[in-house]
Length: 277
Image (cartoon, rainbow, N blue to C red; front, side, top):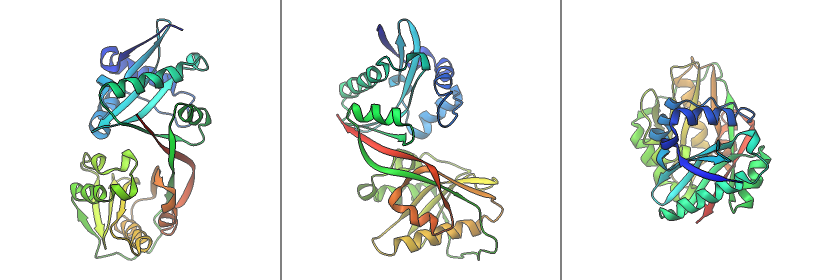
């Protein structure tokens, strides 16, 4: 197996987007990559395209990995191989390249989230040393009619919500996509809110279907009640929203926060994983 690696910037982001779209064609969730989307990931998720490798096998590009970096931690933000390259040890070879590159630049930890139902990927990551931190779950639902407005719910600057989330990082160990540094990169139309020591960010609140990107509750007491309160207050604040969607990024131990507000847990789940380098 003749293997080599180039960076996405060297290979070209546009060609990489085409390659990843092909590689993810049979994935659980269809992901149509574009160059614009990859560039957006540079801004929103700290993806470093210059340090994200394209894998070549016997002279042909067969896959790529998206690497995000903050401090001494890297995140595998996405990785895929075209079907013809699978089952030949290419996945393990790509992972070993990621470990070597991370150590060479002084990183101490590599993290990722992987869909739990993608058993082949979970098996690969565990085989190369990743450990499960927790299960992440998602939710969906609609705003019930007749919710009373909550006057105490006030808008908060996105940086305030990001700071509140960051304060809890040692306790929670946030998944990368809902961590304080990620939230700090958000801008309008996303909106931040606070109520009774709870903090939240709603994405695209003017749309018929919106997402929740942040939910954090200060303090050690009565957290579930306050989480449910802010969630219901958000639904009352945005009565025109027909659907709410929360991707599988939320710690499973918080499930009752969401179900208590009337949201239904979704079947698709993820493992939050980490490997020390």
